[in-house]
Image 1 (cartoon, rainbow, N blue to C red):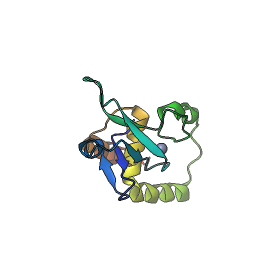
Image 2 (cartoon, protein in one colour):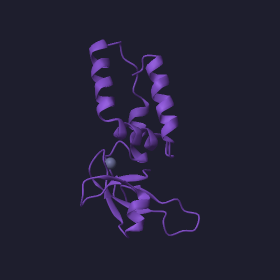
Image 3 (cartoon, rainbow, N blue to C red):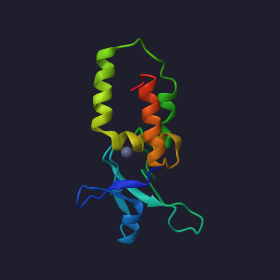
Length: 126
Ligand SMILES: [Zn+2]
């Protein structure tokens, strides 16, 4: 579940509120770049969000694909790979934020995300 998507016309990431205010119903996923539509915007208690459906998606941010990664085991420490991962996370921090949000299937406040990254950094995860 994502609350932000790429506006296909401008190529810029926009919050779902921005799409709803303009009557737009489609955005692009910033992870897999496939079309996403808005749902949950028609019911009074619904929480509008973007989704890849109704057809199946291979996007790692899609909740249907989460189990594929649940069984991955930790590997041996590789400092070079760690430095590369750190650089990639810094370069794609917003995408990483959206993927974390999709994994827990709920919005993450940016301050909580920043705290999580700092904690991960302290214990040498990142
Ligand atoms: Zn996607």
